[in-house]
Image (cartoon, rainbow, N blue to C red; front, side, top):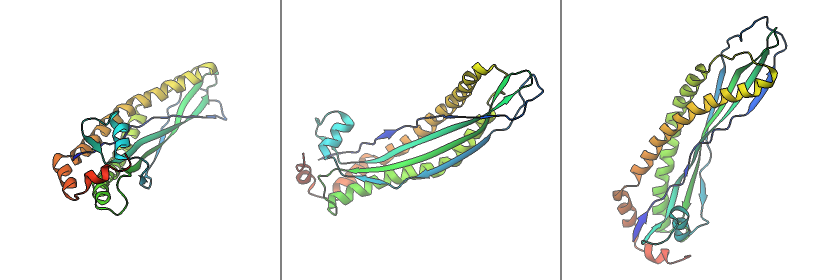
Length: 233
């Protein structure tokens, strides 16, 4: 029997929404005043979802696109690791009519949504079910451990990037949206690079769990793999 673990990879999508708060007073300036944006980050992990809707063949087809080669996926462990950002702008109106699109607050979420898929060939409580579950829980532990470790690092990086935002420059009213988008793109570009870097760390940790030794250990725990895999396929 060939054992193969497949992991569903969900990479972070960065969404930025604009909230405009017009200033109530005019500023007697020809340049935009400097400000210090706030960064508020929330981190969380949702409850692990257990999904039993697919057979081993279904999981293998889903992850590899085929069921040839004799290797079948018995379960999947991992889930979504992602972020969401909202950018709140404060629009300052200068005495000369110029508009300054200042970043007031960056609200962030850094989260994990763990999932475990176990092939429905294996009934709950059976040796095979338990063996697959033990293995997949190692991936969930790695995901949650990564979130705990990197949450403060993510927050520190976000604050560092926000501090690097160029000071706003005065623009006309019809250029405010463009100025805001330029600032959004600045944050998005830097955070995307950072996320790619840290998610590669998570990927490496998950791959280490899926060692040949681990597969042999899972296989050795039960003796009816082929019988169970012949079901529901």
